[in-house]
Length: 163
Image (tube, rainbow, N blue to C red; front, side):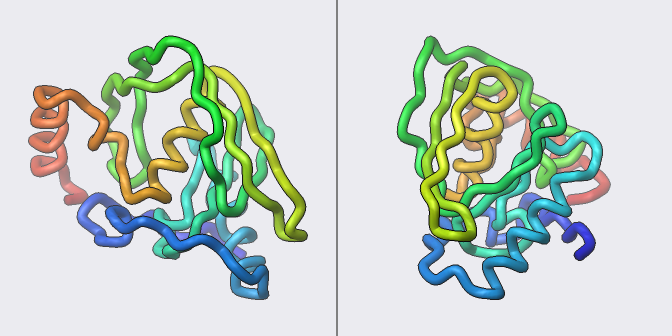
């Protein structure tokens, strides 16, 4: 299947908490295929189901060519001293702002066969795990910015050609 169109800031699905996946059926399998196809494009580290308009807890990732997915992810560990890292988002194109993230993250979930999955790492993987899980909770990275940075970001959004 082809990659799916990314929903942009202002779409209500991006501010909605995603529902857990219960039954793994053809719809969920198709969703995973779409997520994986969507994350393969250059410059994409992750795509949450909400970003393609589906209100289910799933995301795909593409970190240094390692492509995969996880269903019903839950952050079970964040460690290290939070630091500011440059962050952008496909749903807020063209904006990059320093965002406070933990340097290590671990998530657990399941795969399409219902088997337990654990993803853990530092650097870009840790950032992506936090960023994509935020999407599933109805948060954008802009929601994590300090007041002054958020005001500047929202001004940029309002002046953008895509908003």
